[in-house]
Image 1 (tube, rainbow, N blue to C red):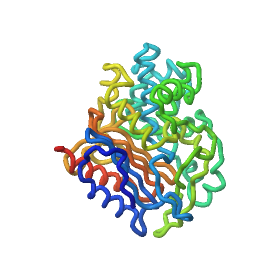
Image 2 (image 1 turned 180 degrees about the vertical axis):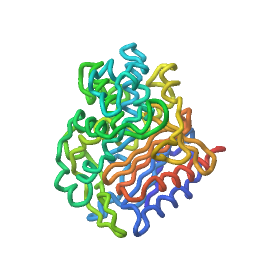
Image 3 (image 1 turned 120 degrees about the vertical axis):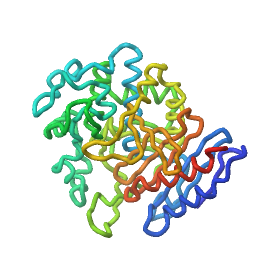
Length: 370
């Protein structure tokens, strides 16, 4: 384990938080975990476990990793920036922007809005939950398909092959398909690629030196932990595999970004503090809907536009996003004003959100009054 303050400023006692990290990486737990906390007292970095189980190399604050669905906050920010510029409206429909793409099998593109994509109330099925598609990413099949390239339109068609569970706006259903459609609208509105918009509008202005959308590139640039995965095996004691190298075009605008703890701090800090969006769009982003629906989501949460609130067991509510992909869980949550933020990553995918609930509770409950 390690305790490494970034500054000499007085910080609250985080021994309880370090204990959570140590427990998370105990035998049978995660390979390694890192946490970066920043508040009015300064910054604190904590870690436990390893980056590489073969070499025993420790986790480091500068590592890059796959952030999973925390990507959605970036995609939603791009959409809202375009709305602020008058280049689109959140109540525009799919038919206006992507004519003919969302039609048939119970779907009507004229009835589904951009807003409903971003807050997951469109009713559109998640392509990742399609049985045939999911099977290609499970167990031995993952090795055969790890370098496959998936076009956005291909995955959208997979999502639309399952009829909607409800009429647009009637309920909540978490769906990556929504964010693929939103990203195609970003590309149509800007005339460039999603990666270009991300770089020009967010990465460069904020100076995010470790953040990028890899497209079909299977490796992670720069220093990074190995990403360990059970490949969704249903065994009681599943074998763990190194899933670091893979083509993540299957996640793209919904979960494909690579970043660092520090970059996530900078992005979510700017987002929560209102430095990326005008007041009107900021209010839209943080207007939430209940996450109850046909498939229950994370207890205690409400979803906005690419961000969500999470009421912790302690009674404290934090805001931000989190995500998972093969071999990686990521969390970036903080106070609503962005003055107190925690970013964390686990380089194994079997521990789930429970570890982050413990980390966030240890941090925000202990310091709520400080």
